[in-house]
Image (tube, rainbow over all chains, first blue to last red; front, top):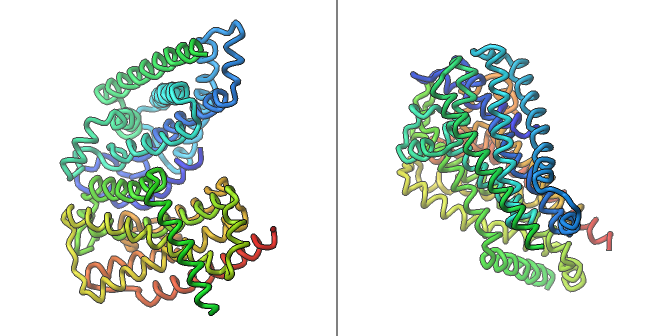
Length: 229
Length: 258
């Protein structure tokens, strides 16, 4: 929970002068960057969702669990409920820190609730991916090893500057094809614009797609894992 | 005779670590890919920062970020040295080394030489990529010598810091204790813009952070306009001495623990 806040503080301090660039969409870099903390926190869901489950596989606990009349959907729901609770708590923390630091949500109280909802969907989606990788690899180290890969997707997105201000063509192309840009832009639009239908539609649409991939993938992988045992 | 023993221990430990590093992709790749990734993300994604009013670095944003990534890779190559020491303690190798080595300070020196060797490779790749990305150099040969000597001092200081932690804890689980403080001081420095453009609390913190002066001096060397050179080298030497004492005391503690 704390690491994204540290990076938010450092990036805001270091890049505050970026708000003076012509065409920068916010008066303060903190307003612009708040979504970065939500996104980074969501990425930790990969580890939160996967590492404990991988440990259960490594210790043989999941094999013993397979002998009980447990439904796979219950196991998956239990695993992801924990991830979701952590996701909600961290999102509330980021929002509270943002308010204390002077951020105002342009979309108002309803916008803050929508921001929490989008953030929660992204958390559950990434949590599902963590569970999927844990079930496929059965190794906590492999799940941990995925974190830098996901972490890289945040830096190769429009997290630090809006896409129209990214000068390098190759970087702007990567950021445009990177779904993380749209999660961030959806969350950010609520803070700095208000109700931007296009940004929200893209953000929620891709978050739903991520959840479907994560949950269906995790569900299939769990069934395969339990069949194998 | 004593110096020959010291040298033989140091070179043997260094060779073993370098061999392990270059023959194991799981050790070799993260140390190389992370600086390249940061270089791509910062120099590529944030290049418009060079248009911020008051940003006056003459070599542009690629050169500005090259220096940060060079120092970051120097510091983290040093930190990975602590991981190697901790791994050797966990496998029992260091205990056997303690029995066999006639001059145990050579062990510390050997790990530090290996860290320097690893960083030399990483720095060469990062530099080649920076030139391929169009980085200009304004400094003379003497300036560039100053730039790389400063980076070497940072590598040695970070290496001794991590060695001190590893010698005391003797477990890889202490990795965050080695890594996090280095990460913090690196990012509490002028990473994205010059010190003069930092605002608010981070400006106050950065002014007290020695890394800020390393970066300012190194960016000055690269541009051929050295600044804060005395403070940077003085602070680097002081950190080197401080962490050398820290590491040697750690070694003594590890010896005493049996």
